[in-house]
Image (cartoon, rainbow, N blue to C red; front, top):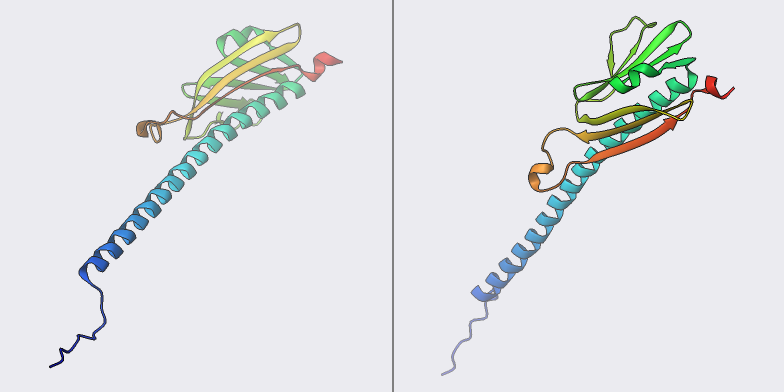
Length: 169
């Protein structure tokens, strides 16, 4: 008598276990990749925010110094940059973790130039040569968003020496 062979098609238990192992490994690799991409995107956003704040503040101070008629040099040592521009007085100062801007002529309240995501860790003003103003500042991200994960906080240090246009002519 002939034995009948089972002709039903299907997967063996070992084949299913191999398939599940391969799919699990692929999902783990994909998940780790996505976590890294998300983390790097967040870190890049924070770095961009810090850099934009530092550049904005430096550009604003440079513009006001160059267009001003005089700079009060006695207040530089106290961390205040006071610029006379026509009939108005413009003041830049460090207030806690922020840099403030006040234009006496506009009648508006003191404006904070830094946003809620960054803080000023260093703001130094000094005379440079006979007419120049030397500015050094360090801007750093606030909070422990990436520092708690074992990464350093993003920070930017900028230095510049600016000569008012009125001193050049």
